[in-house]
Structures are given as structure tokens and as C-alpha cells.
Length: 330
Image (cartoon, rainbow, N blue to C red):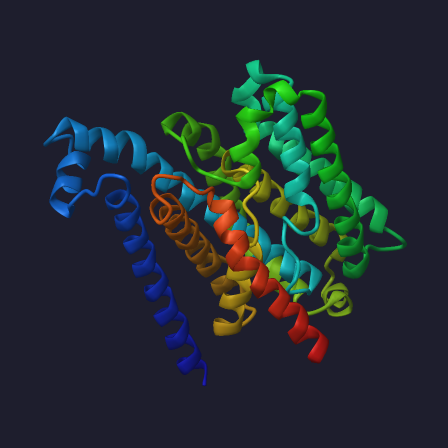
């Protein structure tokens, strides 16, 4: 039985890795101007037509890499939250973590545009403060997962109102953040990748250290305490890591939703709860999904480029409703 399960996990790993590679190829090849595989390879080597070099290296490659990191961070964030809260409906966008990062990012972009280089820091700081506030509101001799989710939903509504208030007060500057609010990678360049790269790499490395405590939390609070673990501290640290990952993704990708909900849930159904496999496979799946969705959003509606967040919401919302119905029938 264990051998069969491991074979299945490795099969899913190779399928996701192959899908990731294909997503990168499609992201670099397709668009307003199609690029053949030979032209793409030459462009990546700095050879061939300068037009193709500009299209592949300067325009599409940084966008694809950013999409990979955004998807990986969102999926990892969702996987951690769902495990810690023991709820498949937990997602950084639904419980307000992404909203906190979004509010601080909007304030930075609209009110303090001269500090744009601090956007990832502002987004993480907003997600971090929101997480602490949600945790404090849910605390009553311990923070139950139900209270955290309820507090998060209420906080999400408040943060949405505050974002709208900022945009009304500074309506003359709103145009610059509209695409960001919808969640999109349009116009992302090497400059934006340099913004998020240190934070994304740090977050992914920290995920490796989160695997063991996340697995411990799967045992339940009482069992974890019997093993001598500080359950509340572990839960807080994991939620903060989830906030860091969500803030990193939000800082560059905008309010892209449902990746952290859909991908970890699907991977969990396929390979189980073990975070040694769930976390890395979720990151692979999230990375591939965002690149596929971004490529579809900018090619299927040509000459209009649809923000990837809108397309993912159209895909994710029905899945969310399916989960709600399934939990009600269970």
C-alpha cells in the first residue's frame, strides 16, 4: 500500500513538473506575436532577430518567472492555512490576509508612489498586521480555527471598504492601480522580479522548515501537546509564514484569488495530507496554473488583455461553491 502511494506521489510530481515546463514554453511562445521554439531558443541565447529577443527576453520571460513565483507562493500559503485551520475553505484571499497586503500596497502606490521600491515590504507588513489582528480577535484562551476564519471574513470586508475609501479620496490616481486590483501580470518586468525575488526565495526556503511543524499540527492540538509542542506558537508561526508568502505574491501580482484554495485542495485529494509532498507539489501546481491562466488571459481575448485574476476568479468561484455544497452534504 505504501509503495503504491509513493508511486502515485512520484507520478503526480513528474506530471506537475512536465506541466510546469510546458506552461513556461507556452508562456514564452504564445501571444500577440507567436514565437517558434527555435526562435525562442535563439532569443534566450542572445542570438537571432532582435525583435524576438525583445519579445522573449524583455517582455515574456520576466512575466513568466514572476507568474511562477506568484503561483508557488499563493499555493503554499493556501496549503499551510488549510492544514493549520483544518478547513479546505481556508485561503489567504478569503480570510483577509491578501486584503491586508493589498491595502498597504494600494496606500504605497497611490499615496506614496516615490516609495514604490518598498512595495513588497509594505504588502508583507499589511498581511502581517492583519494576521496578528485576526489572531487577537479570535483569541480566547486559545485561537480556534473557526474563530480565526470568522474574524478573517469580517476583516476582509473591512479591508475592502478601506481600499475603496482610499481610491475614492485619491480618485485622480486610481487608474494606475486598477489592473493591480484585478490581479494581473501585465507590464511586469525584470525590475518587478528584482523586487519580489528575495522575498519569494526566502518564503520558499522557510516552507522547507515548516513541513515538520505542519505535519505535527495534523495530529490535532491535544496530540501535539502530548508530544511537548507549543501548539499556539506553532499555529501562529505557520500563519505568519502564510502571510509572508501571500504578501510577497500580492506585492507584484495584485489581488489574484483562488490559487491558494483550489490547488492545495486538489493536491490533497490526490496524495493526502503529508506536507513532505503536499507543500512542494502545491507549489508546482500553483506555479503552472498561474502561468497557464496568464497566457490564456492575454491571448484568448486579443487585442484586449484580461487580468489573470479575473480569469482565475471565474474558474475558482464555481470550485469554491462546489466545496461549500460538498461540506454541507457531508
